[in-house]
Image (cartoon, one colour):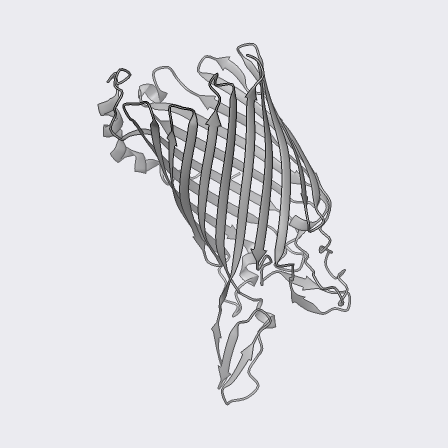
Length: 415
């Protein structure tokens, strides 16, 4: 396991004075507050995986990947004279990954086996004194072959006795997939005079005098997600949540550098339907066993119109070792059937309309287990009053396809 990289931890230094000025200032009696920095989270993680079913090489080949991620989140809060609470969340995330199979992506054979992703977001929310919550937000994500823009909307209502919450969350994602094809699928110039080729993905190839110029277009992919959550406090020890979600996708839903090999030895680019509908239904139950132990359980059923059906069951058991330290072992079990469009390497028939060898769409079971440790000293971490939490999490993931993965994360909170 590589050492975790906290490249953003230095960013908090310039903000410490803001926390120091607020410390020991009693504002509980104020009804009208100015917008102020309430909380800052610095999250860093390391993830690695290995397997031998890469979709880039047709369902065979290495899936080895390493990823380092860093996120900085700032939360600002304001409360007005009638006790409406306003919250602004600003987040900036940065990932850097290395993947052996990525060297096979670029059409001219000049791929780098690494990539980066940047994803900022901003969210606004108001909790009104009548129990109504309204929120809106937007986010961006950009990497070499994938760019997206998202909008989200939240509407919630809390009952007068504070025992029931109804929340609707709607999200829309607008993607642009860059149509990068495998090298061997690009036509080669056979004449010295200029010629123009159009590939299966719509790439325009201009060739002449042995020189190839490639114009790589993009194509849209849209996702619309609506989630309804009903949360109920049944009694002082038992809380229940029911989650119903509907997800509709349209556009180009495959990837042009995912190869597929057929029974006759031919190869093509992955081809999938241009629409997909997903229906996850879940239930979450939390039970408090005295002051030290909580049982957090979750079950989800999933189905979609690509033929996949899946079940997820998980359990996390936070245990309070002391008033300031808790330890939470967790376990998740997952099982799914294969998509109607999936077949392994060289098992697709040439007559198939849709085809993929992406093992994310195969039949498999997986297990994910690990432990979470949270430290919240009364006087602050390292006796720094506004440095109030360190959260460490480690998980190991295993899949019956042979995929193995590990991840470790750390969350530093300043409040």
